[in-house]
Length: 352
Image 1 (cartoon, rainbow, N blue to C red):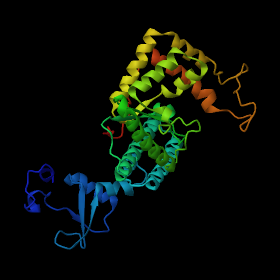
Image 2 (image 1 turned 90 degrees about the vertical axis):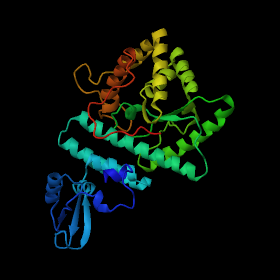
Image 3 (image 1 turned 135 degrees about the vertical axis):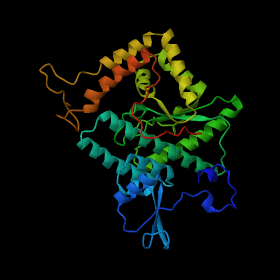
Image 4 (image 1 turned 180 degrees about the vertical axis):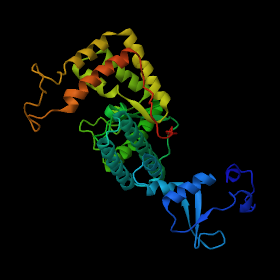
């Protein structure tokens, strides 16, 4: 098989020249455990099922390693393979729902949260990548060819920080390569339409639209590299409360699909401004300190005083956000564009 894949054997050759020999067979009633043992013992990835289990009776089916993974139930590796093969958002929705069942199982088993977050992030990333590819195929089917300017899809907020577990609302943006002024409108039109398809499909997968429209389908958050640099400069050099709030969302970005060099260029630009205007970090730090600690003077939890969740403890607002805001300041101060993941369950596609 390996020889055939590299083109070293003519298509007219006999199968016996490239096949694994001898053919390993089994009865249709063989157990999963037995199949696994045979595959390991003979170093094969397929098992041939025959009527009487011998190699001289008619073939009734073939078992593969993928079949075994599916039989074994919810498995991160299975999810990733199925996502990459999915053709509709309904398929992706079903897979993501199964991933949440796995999430619940891990939490009940008290699996380390870092490992859980790593797996869900990987699943979310591959799902987003698949949605973008499906959106690109839709654009091509409609006769819209991609521009020469490449792009990068950025995950923002909790997904950008690799801490999103449940399906929350979307936070994303798109940056594309700089183009001549006369081409800018056409390129932006293409990527806005693409982003619209992506955000719609993500919504169909269970990721709600952002109420504040902080999504790539918004013209304000689908721009060229130069436009993004100018936007970041404006926020950082004129840090009013609104600008600081936007920084707390958009500075937690991470490339998920496409040309990652565009994301790196944005980080370099941000760090260069911080180097020149260190007062910006003071504004971020002040904003972080405005979130009260989760405990009262008497060491009780600080609960909500009014609203729908009165007398309840808001874990995100009271416990997580202060830590996140503080970590953001330290990250920017130390010029850390990203943190390498210590746990991985598969190779990640790099996009176009």
